[in-house]
Amino acid sequence: MSGLLVAVVVIFWAAYMIGKKTYATGVLLVAGLIMLAAASLLGLTPLLPAKDANAFFLDLFEVMRRTYSSTVGAVGLQIMAIAGFSKLMDHIKASNVLLDVVSRPLHMIHNPYIVLMASFWIVQFLSVFIPSAAGLSVLLMITLYPLLVRKGVSRLSALAIIGTARTLTIGPASPNMIFGSNILQMEVSTYFLEYQLPLLGPLILVLFLSEYVTQRYWDRKEGPDPGAIAALESMQLPKDVSLPPKFYALLPLFPLALIVACSPLVTSYFGLPKIKLNVATAMFLSAILAIVVEMIRLRSAGVALGSLKPFFEQMGKTFGLVIAIIAASAVFAKGIISLGAVSTMVAAAQNAGFSVEPLTICACLIVFASAFLMGSGNAAFFAFAALVPDVAAKFAIPGILIMLPIDFMSCFGRTMSPVFGASMATCGMAGVLPFALAKRQAVPCLLLMVICPFLVFWIL
Image (cartoon, rainbow, N blue to C red; front, side):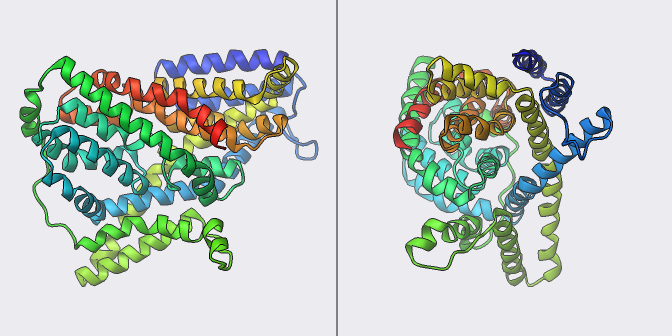
């Protein structure tokens, strides 16, 4: 019980500090170290096995080193490779070509709400292949947003649809999916095809209908948006530039096609030999393919190879932005487990006759609230995902039943947050307040939050 009390105090302190906009990575790391030290001093869990133990202070940071090493080695390269590939597709304008190809039918539609909701499906499709929320949002702002506004769509409705790009973590290029599948020791393709995909149909349908009803309601309540065109004209849109050939639209799709083609589900269905394809391998292979295509198109090896520079630069930036918080979250989770907090709570729930469903719903609410306050889905998910195997083992259930709902919850909370970086960027470009957009996203996100856990229990 003493371990649980310490964990509660430290977690509340961490929540308070993060609520005050303190650097989340630093807060989670320090909180984790405090809990690890407390677990050792209280005699609950030693920092290291007896054969590896040295001085207490040194052991504490040795635990940190080992946690960082195992975490970064396991998922770091995959997430960095995804970010690098996404940047490469942006650099060679393959993402622009993909958006141009899929959005062409919109030019033939004149009803604003049909255009708006047709755009919803385009945004969901693109989110599978462009995993960066900020990158995709900015791309949509300079391409899809002007089209929507000129068709008569209000600024906030257009921003709401663009904001749905990462409301659902779709596809094996999602950092959440990579981290979650690694924690569960599961193939990314298995996580996506066998467990996530069956839930996407009903969730996307609910999101589509709720967005339509919500945006139409607020447009009627708030009236016309006469400043939309004026605000559009004030945006510093890039000058028209020539795009590569249309077949470049296939390049962003190539990694997903590879991952799905090599998944156990597909190979076993067609009786093919088992092929184990790592996400990072698929990204590196696809990047080299893109460079070869660039060499042929530009007839210049030097210019084409220069496109690898943004690829590797983005990998480095991602280490600081994403990998650091994954490792800090792993230390945080290890501290909670070392204090025996998870075991104590699970035992209390079992003694009270509770099943795993109420605990899962509580975890969902915590992750949703954390993502909303921090404006970061990754930070909220990474901090709790590492606890899932321990909880699942004590209830003797598959960890995916807990992992999937908190994965989705982190994105619902982030999308609704007025301090979500991508939302703040798009609102700034459009000249509206982030809180006005958060208000429009509230009903769809809250509806998804309620429905998602029950869908997981029912379908899986």
